[in-house]
Image (cartoon, rainbow, N blue to C red; front, side, top):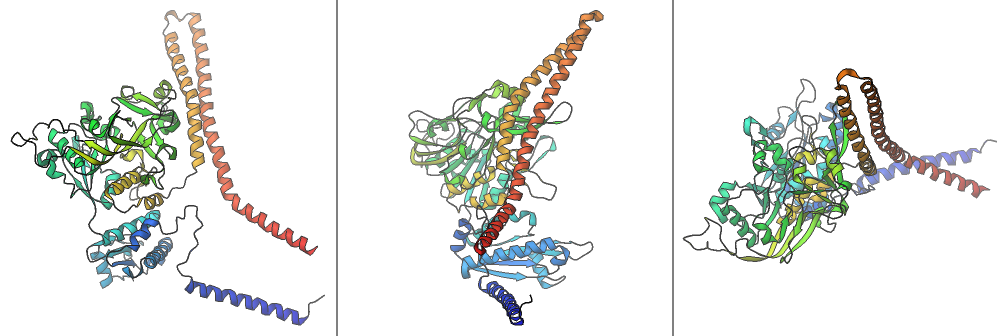
Length: 623
């Protein structure tokens, strides 16, 4: 039966009105709701961070940001054009949050124009995205009354770090006087030319530090020559002391007096610095891998275990080595540790939003009985930590033998700590050689402080790129797989009293791995490595017996039979080894497939269930 014409016209009119209303609402929302976004991500990674809002809300002077984007970018690279739109939208968020203190400008330079000349003069990089084509610009120029900085080219692969880049730029423009960090180090943090003409690159953590602080390296000889004048607490906000060894007495005194006068310090010592052994092999043989607290220990109220490092089976990092046949083998390294949330002081602001931290052959810190200072652990092993003698690790570590030699321990070992409170000078009772002036103490000598404030980390490898940075292809940025760099910067920010950008750095890391897979992988590897170590030792024993049997004189029948038996045992042992390794891979791959399937299928399944529920309820209402 056909519906009456009136009903059909009514339905058509309703459809037209619905379409008109949809278009009208969208047009209204595009103008009235511009800048409003609903962020449903787990960690609100698309909303402005508190640190960003703090910078934008406290601009001491107007800041101008000029976004330079070539019009030809859309034709040259649609992906780059999409990123340009996202950058512009983010800048609008910043301008809205800052009010009239942040001025946003846009410029599209044409070839051979004045705008292109300005872009080049400001340090922007033009890239020819098409063969033989004109360069395309996509950069940001920031200026204020006190400074002028630029991001030469905004690369899409660095999008997770966009908020960090923008906030850092604005903070620098608004407050050009950055906090000063004095660096006293026996490691070549800033890079160096080593023995034999080797070029040592700067540590990534050091380069990152230079972006946020005014970094002032002080050579140890200069510190000894200038004394306390080189470390003036009125000028230096934080002292970064790395791997102090063979410090001249005058240098030790200058460091001591800096702290007694209220200076703050981040100190990294190490009973076995693999960074020193890697970068300074010619000095490692002469003891360059070892540093200690020396005279500072009793003054600060703590000790560093001499000749021992921390191990923990539960926190052992997975490493890949090459077997004799060239194939990769995954092992757990007892003294290379991955420290999660359970292995840190969760209440300490330095850890806000940070991921795992990796250390290598870290030392063990202990408070001194009766010390006047307060010793607050920052990083520590689990309850099954075990001390490991350095002699078992050098000159070359065998992770399998190390694992087999050390079952789980029964103590929590402290790897880093805050030290605060009352402290006496390390030289309160006797001045070091060469410091006295005409036989009298130097003027301004301080014997104690009520406000000692420092952090001591018993590991220098926490700085080493090998432990937290993955190198990409040439021209691609390095990717951090651990939060070591962010942790060190957060400590420097806290000690110096600067704006905390740790949440932005954590967002910039951008990695959102399947943490459950990683946990299962570590547990399975730890469980199976004991079996693998035993099988490997059995295989080596059979092979030695085989060599002895083959060397038996006369080729007697019993020797030939023994050889055949040993061959069978070797083949069987190798088969067991293959099964153990295959089982490890299968365990991880199985859970990985399940989790990936669940992540992909969960939302569609929920939508289907919801739609089915709505349909069923409508049917029941009609019945």
